[in-house]
Length: 195
Image 1: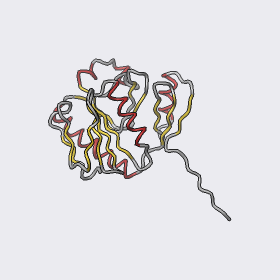
Image 2: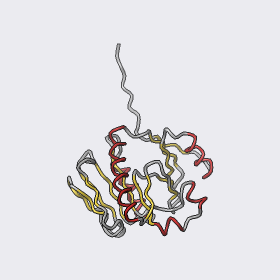
Image 3: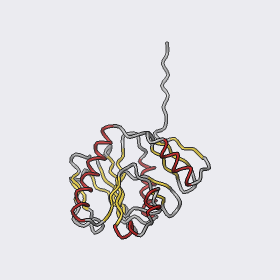
Image 4: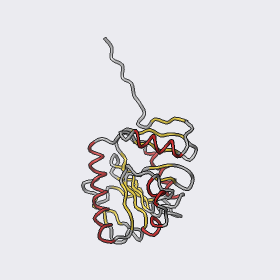
């Protein structure tokens, strides 16, 4: 008896017309999945992260959260938070942060759903099944839509790509830590448990 191996993509892509409200309700009713929508309306369905990646995401959220509680400079978000970018894409970075004055400029209704704002800071943590090219494109999209700093942490290759507006991507091989620079003043992420 021959066994056949079927390989599925890590992200399922569908073209489906949904209003913003329908998309939001679909996400609320299917919390076991992560949904995003591209600027062209393509629906992306991603499975939950594996436990190891989820633990590393948690560590990053905790570190950012501790810094944010001390500074009170903004609002931090985990991977289940969605944002509607200026180009119309709806994205959920693994970790993100918005300056307090930008967040407070949103209405309570805007804050409740997928806030119509691009975070100032975003992190994407590449799991073993993630396409590096797709993550790089997503990071570029964040920067083009207003993010001031982005980290693509590539565990597979033990490197970090740093994205900033108007600058070339900086690549660090096997870094020990990352600085939040002037976007997150005083924030340093220790990468020893992440990479």
